[in-house]
Image (cartoon, rainbow, N blue to C red; front, side, top):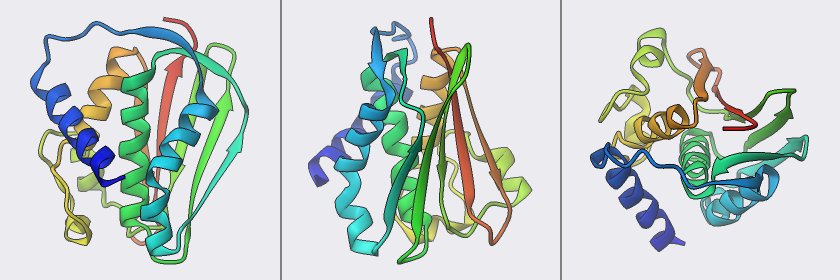
Length: 174
């Protein structure tokens, strides 16, 4: 499991450093299965903190680069676990819309200030809560690059002391 996390970090570094590789390997992908794979990969981290991962919502497929979107899900879920308080819950919700899909990751962490929200997706940026766990400052930056390649969006809603909700919106067809 630690090896898989290390490989994900290496993938982030490669994603960020190889801006010339904008070719997507698109396939029809079951998004709930992809979320389930990310949860299985990180369940040991959640168990260490007594965090329950709850998945709810629609079951649907979207045309995505499975490996890259899996990396986005791993980054968002790892952050949600890392920043959530012990013995809480991380919620992942899938919503199927007519032209796009939305996957949200909700944590019970310290939340983000307005300044932090404005800087969140910058390369190497780490917020005030970064001391909670080690990080490279590349995960959210790489995630945004990947979602942008899919002509989607990644946004966050948060207030200090109230956790954060990250939204990944992807078009159903590329």
